[in-house]
Length: 466
Image: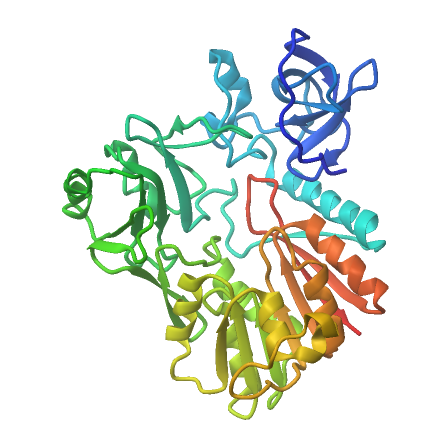
């Protein structure tokens, strides 16, 4: 069951807390409970079957459903941890002092085995509900995972409070809760001690630290009127103590400024090397790039001399492996919408003539490159330089919104012999798989991976054939 995404209803003078028996897990990190009157309550920080006291966070007399956080456990599931993986995200602690928990570790109260069972149930339910596909799902651990699911994030994003302290948002809130450490990040990020800096004038801080120990990068998104000189002096305290790069971009500024070091981080997977910009995309789990670089193209099974298509390609993690597979007699077209990330990909493949990087929305690039993939009224002129060969295999890794109807229909029209679809949202994946199935495609396999321990997120890889 997926909780509807609607604005929070207005508060009302109803019960602040309820005692509830929790039901099944729902997509989005909730369990589903019902009041004695039958009202649905989506509850975070619980486990199915537990008897808990819930503090309502969204409620109203006319609301179709309510939301709440567990604040006391009266009957615990045996897989509930005795101690949450991160205290600021534990509502049993934070609501005790009248504060909401931060997001970012909403499954941190459960043992990893229980987390994976919950995620498997969500993926399986979404596949049945939206794709009409019944299949057994096991969520696989990533290689070398920490027993508590800590230290895996090589990227982190922080808000900044009015006092200049980095922080994170509670669920469905714009408030900023200051944080000093974040146990889910790799140690190189926590070691920067960004919580000690006064970052007034920055609206957001993005941090990247390569898993192989390379130089980390701190990027500031600046508010209008930010005192850049003061911020540069403040960041100089950081760069004077360790090897770290710093970049910043102001509102309306076309290119980021490099304040220290270099404007990118160096990443590796297999024999390949990338320079990923501060605002560019890269897989965040420390083990994900080399592992996915091997597994996803293997699922696509490209052969020498074939033509491959890599959609939502990012900096080209899968592009590189596909290019290796098709060889010099084959071709790879990589499509990426972000100007920053597509520029990273172009740099990475400048010396590989069989790779072509296209910048733009996937739907529009497909329409202009393969006009036959789009209904006549929506066709565009072929790209300059001639139409590309029809793809034999396709890899796609869309954002949480999924590929969507138009792109699925275009891929069906192109009729590659195999598609490998990597998804970070099981609901949009299931929706798209349902459309493929209705067009006559077969889902050969579905695998799920725990690339986001201690959160409700799960990565899923589906292989399709016509």
